[in-house]
Length: 91
Image (tube, rainbow, N blue to C red; front, side, top):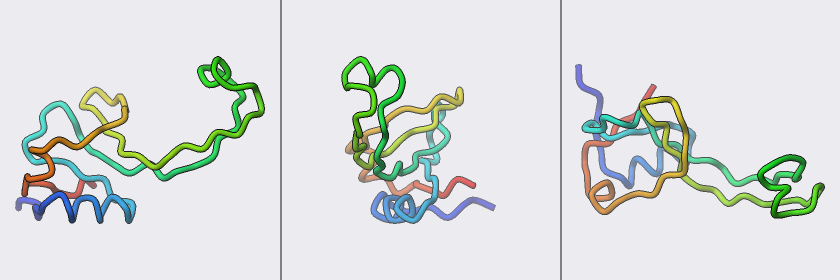
């Protein structure tokens, strides 16, 4: 049975509620998810290269991608991804 697919608007809504999503045709990525904003007290590299130790840094919410090799990085949506209707929830 194929998973339910949908457009990016629903994918974003689902990410905001904590789900991981992906495109059906992705080969080099497994999922995208929302990283909620947070505050972090600088206590180690690499931030202590730019801010004094103990400085509170506020991270803005952003989307991260889990690559097929297990690494995680910041992800930006493309025009093709926004217009695609093959998004699905990743368990």
